[in-house]
Image 1: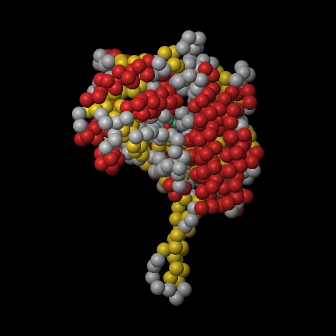
Image 2: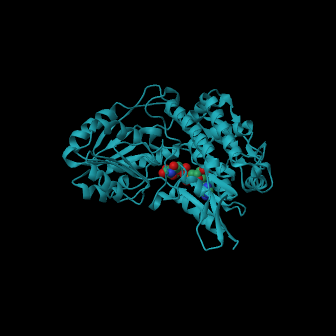
Image 3: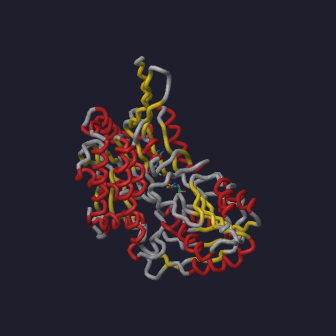
Length: 489
Ligand code: NAD
């Protein structure tokens, strides 16, 4: 796998089923495209329902009868800790793979490796601390609430942060004692194949972790519809989230949906503007804006709007865009499809005559076959436009002025989404009022770091989805409580 991060040889990867690596039963493969150049650099197994069925059976066996289902909680935790250490030991290789596969600048890919290791470490440490309850009840009776794993969990992973989202979802599920079947995104998934190799190497028993690549329709659809899975964890688009929830309904299994957002940063005139500036930029430029928790709307109090926009525009104009290896401020988008989607939104800004306040620069020598879109700052975006309402998933920031606190809250809550928000003000009472009034899953006051907080429960309201990942909260999603009532007199 080493050579995946560089070089021209085209690697062909396989699925992990039980403890065996095998090609798709059909023998078909899918090409993997390097976003920085548009060139094919690997092939993955193009799996379908037959491969998914093998993987689910392997997981079922591991959970119901295999060594995995018999491990003590601390032993599961120890394996996750070992996996965390193995990820760090192989950090350069994993970062190189993720950078090439996703188009991320190397520094971003390195940060993703560290976060992934932290997920395994956090959930490794939590595995034997997930207690049940005793419940006060009638005289002569003792009631135990036993927290049990669900069984086989299905994980549909997107392409924007393959390693991190695998870490947060699969890490929590394994810690809770489930056996996992993972269907990564067909646009970027090579780092996960390497992590699965590491999981086998550190001693995870056969079938605890199974990984099957393929398209969303053929492999993802087959996994979410499989009658022997017990839970689905999905991160991706609202449209596919609907399909996944329907599939979950057919089998009456639980589901967590993390469907992205249109998150706001709200900047009041009394904020420390020097502090706001780097956060306003990073929250939309990180990963070329392809981040579920990206802050793609900047709501700014009208009295400072022009002056702040001038400063922000100067900083935006200085942003440099290039190939993942160049390690600049921003890399390419994941695919030609995603680039076309972002350009459609930019076309709407042009057609409406909106002021383009700043654009970053694609540096010389960047391949014109890569999927590059410069970071773009658009001013005075009318709140009813698609630019201010829909998830663009690109480095496009829509700035919107507001007049007072009430209008700020109304605008912030005015989209169909509700994932995160950042709030910048020195007024303590206002901080508390707004943090309560904002309809979303996380609020950052005078700071922002939605992606970084492994310990912090994360998830949405409204069309951003439901259920919580990260932190201890995720462990409750991946377990169910059994109530046992003893009558002893
Ligand atoms: P997508 O929802 O199609 O893909 C996400 C995952 O779902 C992939 O693994 C894909 O293979 C799988 N999938 C697709 N169809 C499926 C099906 N019928 N059944 C089961 N699994 C299926 O997302 P996309 O098309 O790659 O991106 C489109 C938009 O989604 C983006 O522009 C962005 O707005 C949003 N998105 C959000 C996130 C996030 O982190 N919330 C991640 C990726 C994409």
